[in-house]
Length: 345
Image (tube, rainbow, N blue to C red; front, top):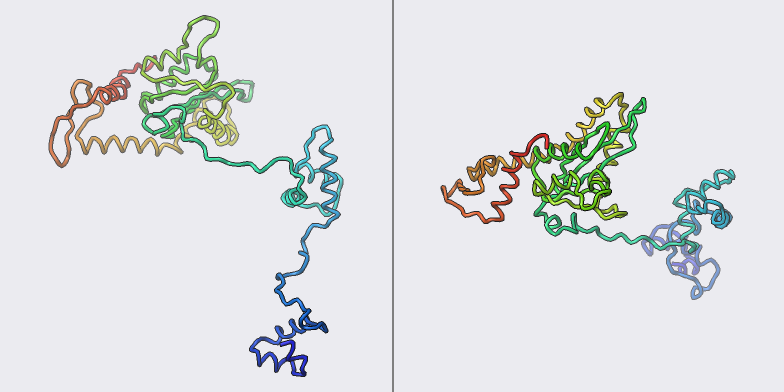
């Protein structure tokens, strides 16, 4: 096209001959200018302007690097993107780049101290207990929230609990929390929802028991062993084992404690039920499963005995089934012991 124009043809005639737009011919003729055709750079150029209009100027980048060096030697020693932007605001510099732009400047200049964090997949729930990790057993995790004060100086403590697989939650605010009250609340929870295979606690004294006596076992541990529930204690300074209940603690404080104004303990106890209702559908799923088992096998789960169990199949009639000792012990622990559990243990 450029050669045809240089031979004297008009731009429009060349455009019609090569079946391109007039603007295309003008662009390539302007690219060639008066240069010899064998010396013209015919390669494609990137779209847009050579320099972005919103590109941060070099002077701004130099100010960012200068402030980072000064903040690194400050008393606090904070020299990240947030600290740099705050310093620019305090010094009334203009323009002030955004936090993300400052981060890109530091990355482009290659002065980031740490490498990018590598996120690995988490281990399965209850990985330290094979039965819980495989989903064959349930674990109830418990913890306490302390340091809550109502208007007037009334201090409160909240016992929280959650089942790691079923997601069944419990929150009990009390004016005082001790081992005896913990045992009563655990018994009420397990009477309603059933006994788990494991109960996990942190290392608080109300869960462990007193330390001033040798070979002493606390009330909470004795109650768990009496009911056939294995107590598990999280290692010190290892919060990962209590992630489920710690997440519940944060959610309860955000959704219940900080959202409403509580005049007294009774108002707080009424508000706590709203959070439990949010996850009540999971408990309803367990009840529906019990009903389906009773309808399909014609077994009344409340009348199960450990000596003899007869299972009736809806499509095959009645047939006696020999239940192994493991299943028999599990049924006995889950139903008969639970029904006979005293309310004031």
